[in-house]
Every structure is written in structure tokens, then in C-alpha cells.
Length: 75
Image (cartoon, rainbow, N blue to C red; front, side, top):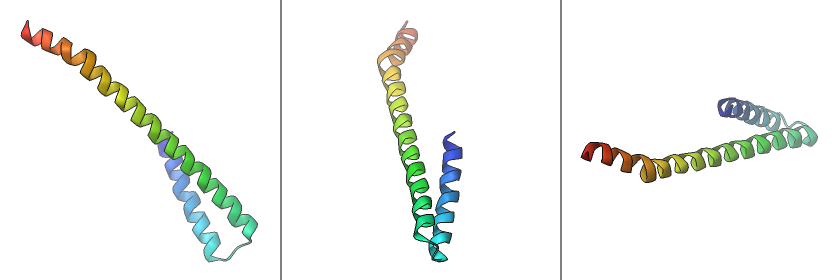
């Protein structure tokens, strides 16, 4: 899903630049800018989710899996 959002973001950024270069109506530019801003926000939320999940995995590894591994190796 995040790959789709990223591709859509890139496409909308390109569209926005195109509209600005052609000096389109400000209403069209504003709508395109709003779409880009929304997609950017979605990307930031996805990054925050990934960071949170990563921290939970690291915590699980450090607090539960590593001690179990030491116990297995140490006998």
C-alpha cells in the first residue's frame, strides 16, 4: 500500500509542477496542491507506523528473544 501511495505522490507532484509551469488556473493548482499535501501526510503516517513497529520488534528481540537464545546456547 505504501508503494502505491508513493507512486501516486510522485505522479501528483509531477502534475502539480506541470500545472504551475503552464500557469494554470489557481483553482486547479490549489486542488493539485491539496492532493499532494494529503498524500504527503499519508506517507508520514506510514513512516511513523513503520518506526513504531520496528521499535516493538527491537524491544521484543532484546527483552524476550535474546534471553531465550542465551539460555539455549548456555544450556
